[in-house]
Amino acid sequence: MYVVYEVLLYLVLLLALPYFVLTGVLRGKYVVNFPLRAGWFKHRAESHDLWIHAVSVGETLAAKPIVDEILRQRPETSMVFTTTTITGQAQARRVYPEATVTYFPFDFAFAVRRFLEHHRPRVFATMETEIWPNVTRLSKARGLRLVLANGRISDRSFPRYRAFRTIVGHVLRKYDRILARETTDRDRFIAMGAPAEIVEVSGNVKFDYEPDSAPLEIASQLEAMIGDRKVVVLGSTMEGEDEALLPEIEGLLAQQRAFVIIAPRKPERFEMVAALLATSSVRFVRRSELPVASDQLPDVLLLDTFGELAKIYRYATVAFIGGTLVPTGGHNPIEAAANGVPVCFGPSMSNFREIAQVFLRNEAGAEVRTASDVAEFAARMIEQPELQRAWGERARTTVLQNRGASERTARRIVELLTEGHPERERGIWPGGRHDA
Image (tube, rainbow, N blue to C red; front, top):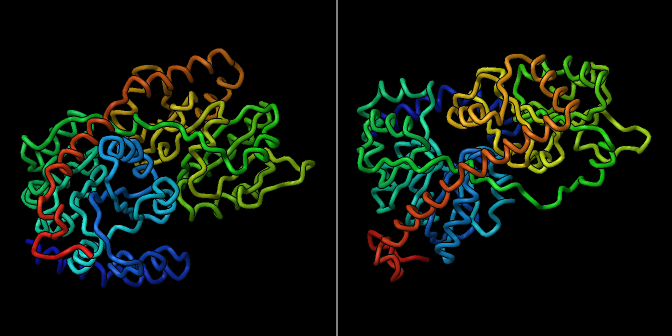
């Protein structure tokens, strides 16, 4: 099975190579991390207790309370933290300064072996549903204990996984623990072939998010631009949303004393959104161009940087969660809600299904159908301060009432670290290799 998989990987690579080369030349997207993902490291090899993998920014932030709890329970834990995306990498380097932060290896056997040889982890914990056959197989073969944390199976991906149950189940059976976010996810993992005895519901660690209290680099400039205006944050917007929202922004600014912050989800959208704003009637400035003259205060700030949106929410009167008016699966409303900000999101929330249900059930978030609905919700929050405070308080309370998954997840990981390999504690790597 794995030989066929490896052959298919190489075939896909050959077919997709022109795209990767072109994208790398134009955007630098794959060139920067290719050597590290192929297992070519410049820093010296060293052993780590724990390897945590998070795909991008959201998963990287979600892992923070787990990491904090692991270190509280077992302070000596050494860690290598991997991401797939460039934005996730930048966030991880900020959030985990004490960890070895690098890129997740390509799932080619040679790259995985080089990664394991170089970083020598004992336990591998992957966030959400990063199921890679060679990483799983080769990690298990080297004696690692495996955990799938905060596991979820989306409505869209479940039929595909179930169709390949024989293959997927073979991979899932190599895990020691699968920690699902909710009962639906647990049932789906079992239907995909995971043994029922290793799958448990631990809750959603994203509810354990703590608002970042560190100062925002542009705080003084932002506060000067905002003045006494109410702040509308359009966070993690995707293609199709900015185009639909811009006319509504123009109308909102004409009717309300408001300041709008737009934060596109993907860096490649920065230029596109800037071009859209340039054709509109609003005065805008890019975060990368600050500071601005005091007599040229804008109506809109385009947040064209990495890792600042979470801190921006503390200034928000109301927030729209992007990726939800277009069919992308949605984004996480908890960062805004934890700051006591009323949130609205569209119907496309399949990746955050249970979170959306909890917010809607508690009247802590509003579902909107169109860009016009977003503007209408924002206007209500601006015009009715008491209503805004009530929505914000329900949002914050909803987050607080659903915490605890990080502690449960960390406890399971620490259990595996404690079991460990006695020979490793004596400096001997499984298979006879000594730690360097």
